[in-house]
Image (cartoon, rainbow, N blue to C red; front, top):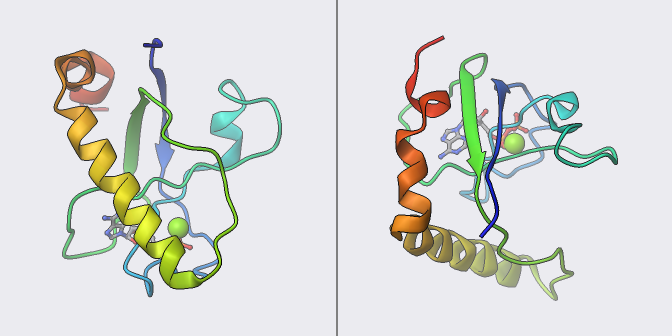
Length: 114
Ligand code: ADP
Ligand code: MG
């Protein structure tokens, strides 16, 4: 178990390179918001495990990073990548029900309005 990293910011436009088309939209956050979490240039693009009726660009999104599932990998096909991401989602959903992770839902950073 690690202490979570709390990060957030406005949801910004990405390249729209088709994650939504694949059924896996990722809400992009400004890369500079991650500089405290990882020092190399990176981005944060959470796929939220909830179906939304509309886009929410510009909205404030807050995250608690509580765990790590797997390293990056190359996949032999787009289908196998998509299947693996769905598996990642199932792993995350199960893990987030465990008390050791579920307790962070009540953390003020995630609960309090702006
Ligand atoms: P972009 O390249 O602009 O990030 P995406 O294809 O990744 O485009 O789509 C991401 C956008 O889709 C988000 O910014 C958000 O407005 C919307 N969206 C709708 N449902 C979800 C979801 N479940 N998870 C993440 N983003 C979602
Ligand atoms: Mg995205």
